[in-house]
Amino acid sequence: MILSRTDPASVATCVQEIRAGGLIGLPTETVYGLGADASNDVAVAKIFQTKGRPQNHPLIVHVSDQDGGLSGAEHFATKIPEFARLLMLAFWPGPLTLILPRREGVGRASAGGQHTIGLRCPDHFDAQAILHGLRHAPGPVVWGVAAPSANQFGRVSPTTAAHVESEIGADLPILDGGACHLGIESTIVDCSRGVPVLLRPGSITAVQIEAACGQALRAANDMPNHTAPRASGTLESHYAPRAKVRLLSKNELKTALQNRSDTKTKPPQTSVGVYVRNFTPKAAPALHVRQMPMDAENAAHELFAVLRELDAQNVAEIWVESVPNEPLWAGVADRLQRASS
Ligand code: TXA
Ligand code: MG
Image: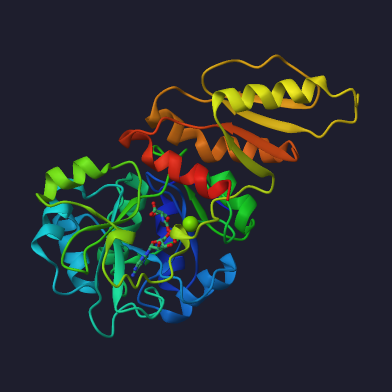
């Protein structure tokens, strides 16, 4: 059930649903989440069940932007290091998730049983309206909304309310907050190991993070005795459409298209989706071509929607031209890598 943002009752419906231990579709600036009361272990269990996600994969807890998100963060986390506070000041509300030591007895199921918890303060008007309502509207106080991306486990994250409905079903109340502005999931920085460690690249770049907290950002696999928690966003294969995704350089892609048009096997040909940047392939039977924006921001914004659209054409494969190996493209490159694994 998609709820219009212009209907004043929509936010109240979502607040009520969460307080009653139910699930909602939560719009954010990155992707849509499948949300539940982060402190209600029974409600959180429904998220895992609905997504088909293993119970020990931790979820991200979303907090309201009151006090820049700090009071919400302090409800769930303890021993917040100075560099993490600087990151909150610089980027909250915004697309940055911080992994922090979890306060004992709080949000156990949301954290997948780990001693740390992932926290994020989303920069989205409707998400904040819900989070504020949960904290301040008459009724029991809800401090945070646990919300992984609202897709079936391992699949492409949803960036519109309609995507959420197609992934989860029409019974879920989904607040329609429009197409997600950024389009890829938040940058995740682990702040629980004394130094900042990048767990998942996103729209906020490593350079911005280092500038804001005055420390070098480590890569997860550079850490000594690295004991990373199970984290779906960091699985090698993730964010995948049904079609097989192949990541190719411009020249490899041209060759593949050439080979395809050379084959004398006239129809039926396997149907292929192509997502290209630096050239425009000739139209051909059963070839679905989409042009990728030349800048990283717009490419991120439409990435998941395009993968979904090509998938909906029932293509057997999606051939994607690889993106520049530059810091601004790190988020998109990461998602393409995982989609093609
Ligand atoms: O942009 C986003 O982050 C979106 C929107 C809805 O906010 N959420 C999202 O959630 O991408 P999800 O569940 O698909 O990804 C959550 C990831 C986990 O897979 C894991 O990588 C990391 O966050 N994570 C959460 N809590 C963690 C913890 N305690 N320790 C390590 N990683 C954690
Ligand atoms: Mg996800």
